[in-house]
Image (cartoon, rainbow, N blue to C red):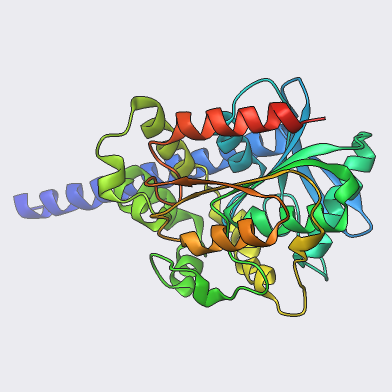
Amino acid sequence: MPPWGRIGVAAILGCLLATAGIWWAYRSDLNSIRQRLASEAQVLETPFGTVEYSRWGSGPPALFIHGAGGGWDQGKLIAEHFIGEGFAWISVSRFGYLGAPLPEDASTAAQADTLAALLDHLGLERIAVLGVSGGVPPAIQLGARHPERVSALVLLASAPFTPLTAETQDLPMPAWAYQALFSTDFPYWALTKLAPGALGGIFDARSELVADLSENDSAFLERMIDAFLPVTARVAGTANEGAAIDPMVPHPTEKIGAPTLVVHARDDGINPFPIAEYAQRTIPGAKLLALDTGGHMMLGRTEEVRDMVRAFLERNAP
């Protein structure tokens, strides 16, 4: 075989070995993530749908409801970063996320009824409820449909809800592009390994926001980006986010009786600030913590948010 032939064979073999190595690393990572998620969560069947949840910590009970593309694991990550210890946390997966499949009625009202059933199962009469982004609409429904169960309500970076519409949002890229990115696991996994910075902008982690982040906040951002894997276990829930703006399912904010704190950055590039103003205006007695900067993920504002939310919960938690 001529020298150039041997070189060609070696190059082909090298490519095959590299491809096999990448595929092995990908499958190994995904299997490890799936095993961890399955081992740390419980699943409850209710008359309204399935709810998946994880519990940790001690203190007054607090329920965390994650945002779009999330799951109980992202809820836990956000709760630990922004609020911290001192509470008996329950983080849930909403319909279509991880171990909670979409029921026939996947509305935010049905989600709230499912969460009330979870509280019954856990023997909790009242609980502080925190929702972030897409978790805000079901949190509002829980506060309105089951006001006796909610001792305090915290709404972080609120997504739009009826009567607001999809036009209220200002997504960094079209909804179909999010669906395409979340259609299979490998492209997203590859980006987390080769160009994680390229994913930050999708979640409103703009360059001017990440330039001077603390080590703690930078680690949080990296963990949040990684926590979208496996994306295929979250795509059904992402596709159902429009349930929050279904005109047939109102969100009666005027029925909320719990003390309410609305937290939102003025420069949120996904859920614009007027959503928070609407929530504060229509929920009786609601208070608004307006952050001048931070974007959708409230980057660089961790201590300010933690101090305000913890003080609020300590005053109002059961």
